[in-house]
Image (cartoon, rainbow, N blue to C red):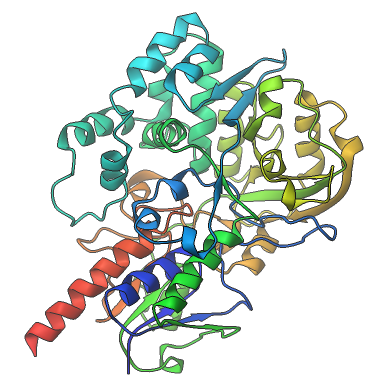
Length: 472
């Protein structure tokens, strides 16, 4: 009998498996795809030699993850590459707000009227990433925060919507920058906790950067799998699990799946009936004949570019996706990995990654709307396109079953579900079936390639196994 069986070899499943194996448990992992990776994969989607990330590409929370930092992933091939600028947010006049490696660099890009406001917002937390991240990513039952003062201060500032946070600033640049940062949550700008989302992304840039993994996001998954194998863990790929009794006997089962899939596989009935899935994205991966011709010089040296010039325009694009309306003038999150990792494309060529927000399960085509938006800030972009790989919500869901209806966050970021995922519970990773746990991004702290949902779930499993052994 195995000590633990993990279903799903995404970053959270692999992290959970590695944590349990590191604790001395025998662990087996079952993955439906032919390779490990989940939301952290790299494939030739367009032309030979062009290596794209089908989902996550940039990893501010990965490099700053307490779980990843505690694992010897560099020994297994993971190398972080930092672009000159973590992120740029260009405007039609050729200028840009930048998210730099320092608070000062970012503040200066916002103009003199808002520079001091940004400094006052972020400086209480700079230099304290380890404590802030540990408290932000921790499970609810983990006891007192490591840094109670900053935890409370961060919460008081970030719990209100980003719409409230933006009112501190006078100029459009700062408000657009904050809106774009919170847009990663794919929700309306008036949702609670979106302020915290924007602040965490900004703090991550100042403290750890927004890097890519050399060779692509697959390197993260491969490093986790390599460490797990070194510890004696066994990974089975190409195995689709439909029922719990198809798995070998084990003392605990962890599912890096959606709550819907877990309920079906483990016969949990309506345990997650109130869990809500959110909007989707429409994603295009490009093979380019040269670098994106951004009008803004700052955008040309950034790893990530947010495309949406005003707070109002970004807010409208997000609201349309949430309320089921097709994109009109989309807000784009884009990544250009080859500015820092030329190995991802043939010499002189580039890969480029962009997505727009669209309604859950949407069946339209946003390619033209996205490219018109890019051309506003990079005239001549279309002339560089050698090939495209276009993926809408249905394609995302087919590629990764956790993306229900194309929801890459595995659950809507709205209301209390923003922080109480997948439901209100003292131990959100546990289920009503003893020994069965959920470890996907549907659990705290939520989406992102950081492994912390898997790490936290593994801690819950270890507590469960200790109690079970003590009761015998």
